[in-house]
Image: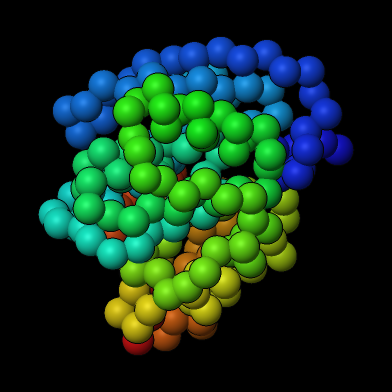
Length: 200
């Protein structure tokens, strides 16, 4: 079955746009069929962005938006923290085309946008990895997101993950604790958990 983790979606392109306001900034995003949450920014992504901004009042260094889709997480973080070196990565070529368009539309420059299966195409070390992992791609893919984040993060680097409780948040938390030694749920809302882990 086709899903948004496909490298080259075969569904007919149907581009649409929506507007949203985040962290006091207005954004416009183009989305398309074959891309995650094409009608609006999904609740989990918005919660991830809000939680990280509240948790980190100042951010510098290198941040990867892992499984970036059409780019909302990386684009918002770059606008909120302009000194960040932000990398958007996804396996989905259609998503990356949209991410490039959305970066231009929202006047965000100096982003890296790379096609990458998980973080295989991204050079480390990273200071932050943010992800709303592709649950429909299966647990093996999701857990590879976590393990490759651990591999690419610098010592002291942070992983932030949003995942619904009913879609495996408790087992994801256990897996992240296994990799990182410790992890915690720093926010939960409407069935979504935000998990934070620091590489020791």
